[in-house]
Length: 368
View 1 (cartoon, rainbow, N blue to C red):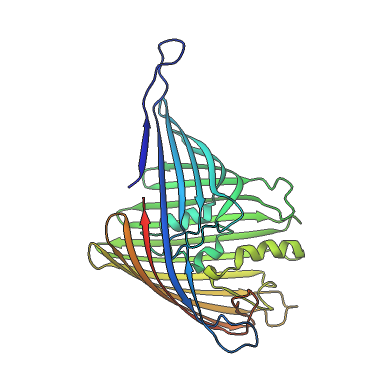
View 2: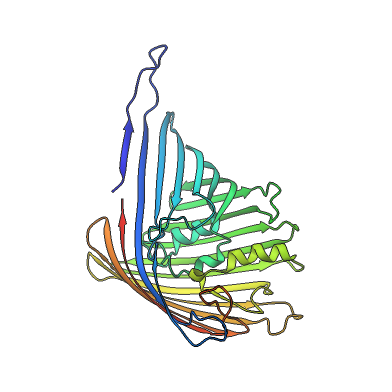
């Protein structure tokens, strides 16, 4: 599945000692889909849907490099570089060229990694109670990831250790004078054995004003035969008195079409959001996986805000068929239903007063 280049041992230029053995693995995903969504009109315009070709339906397309060097004595050096791309138009989806870029050391006492990498919230959800265990979520429609504080963090130091079925991790990252903040601290604890998985994670993000976003998640999963069941909960809480700059940083975590695609007067004023998720997957045949998932999100704000409370309900169902070990085709359908003082974002990005949207996706994914 992955192209691996083995760097064989060679004699040092001086002396008879040999360099440690290393491996460099090049891997990637190319995923392109056609997606239709309803209620994409601008505010005040007649109802209208939109067709798109997207560079990531089941998974976001990527190209990555993994390096492992055996240093001897049970110690290894690790490197990961991963670029995200949009094959539908040849561009990249974010300002960062490398969505992961870290170096680390693996020893008998755990693993330390430094650089831009996934945060502890994303790690515990996707490894323990992911929506789709083979994906681990549907990229084009992923309400659960809107609670993961951006999923990654810059300038991070992460420590991870595993003892039998138990894994624990801690993270810390520096803001380094960023105008939007960026200091983080957090950790997670998970258990996985005999088809049972359970975990809990916590992360604090510090804004430029030194106010904080506090995020918590916990959940569990169970796999038996062809069946997989998962349930999870997440919460984001922010301190009172956020500045306008803080609110913009918070909005970057909470907004986005893939995370529900809604806004409105109460959206930016909210100081707490919660989400519950429950779902199941069934492997009908060796090639065919079926899944359905339900999410319910609720937000609330300070009493000074008019109608701060609002709810959002999301449903997504997908069928994925493996054409080979590397290539699969899939179809997915989803629906979003809002209530309260929030509404959908139209194609132009502004809210359009609609509170219901249906989506349909069909795509092809190749992994190497």
